[in-house]
Length: 310
Ligand code: SF4
View: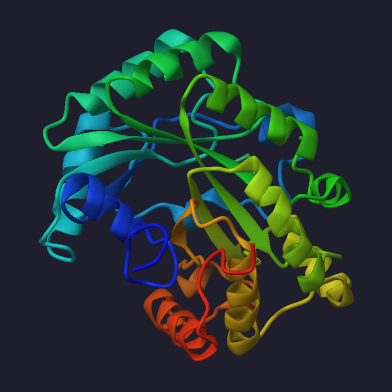
């Protein structure tokens, strides 16, 4: 038994759901029809890697009612994962706090009315959390299982500027402080492989992740999508990128886990999208399940676990 009470060598999301809900809780992506402030105005065309359509399941249609999308999602996942203990509505596409409060309220409350929805996951940017929205999220988190997921992506301002994220590391910390001070649970994602960054930098950055202290984290290897600014950059300046092989990625993640707070729950170790969206196939690592098995084997071989080096 490890410090988080689970038997795996990392603090797995599956263990969290089993402890709280008795088993798997399936996230159902919904598209609420929001846009993103970063695509429209702050920088030219948004993040250089942005390809939101690559992450949307085929059943999603933004013009359908939230309840219809969720019912379609239930049917979609029913065959793949028959044994579930309910669902979370996952507001995933673009920036899901980028609308006036009454609009946000309508969408989120509509999701909560759907049978078997146990809570919400709301994905957004650090610079899109005005105080009236924060107050509403705080109130919402008292009556449902709410996670606000903030894209951190990198802990380096030079990188954030280079990839046109349109916010800084400081604004990331500020957003987490505001959410945590209102007792709103947070999740985040990080990308390993952004231009000019190196594995040794990512390894030092784990301290900043521990300081940020989200409740949940997702790790993504950089994926370069077709028809993005990053695709052109990769073609013109491949030397700015540091791709890792699957085995290197596994060893890196194990080094990272050993230094990471045991309290942070891990949702994913890599991203998976249909290969037709990818401009560069070398980033297409193993399927997620196979990657997780390799990580567990490597931790077993080392006889270490998440947080052992702290
Ligand atoms: S914040 Fe998200 S939706 Fe907006 S430009 Fe960046 S990747 Fe695209």
